[in-house]
Image (cartoon, rainbow, N blue to C red; front, side, top):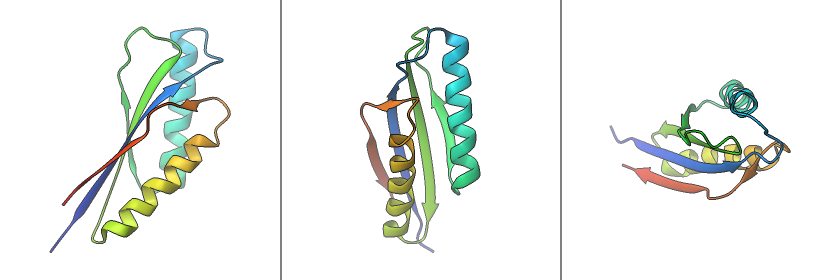
Length: 96
């Protein structure tokens, strides 16, 4: 059985965040909305004490690479449409 794993890594700028607590609230909300809407795994990338920067890693697995790629593109568009964040450097990698 063949499997494809896709990983979308995004760096985010949180322009309206003025504290680490506010950054955490925004990122947790975004992670939960992605998990509820899409069948993907989401983890937060660590940006330490930078309260206007954050990162997410989103992964999806499936038998067909085209379906995995489309799932990650839909998630990427969803993040781009969120007014609380600006996507800086999206990167998609595939592992077979």
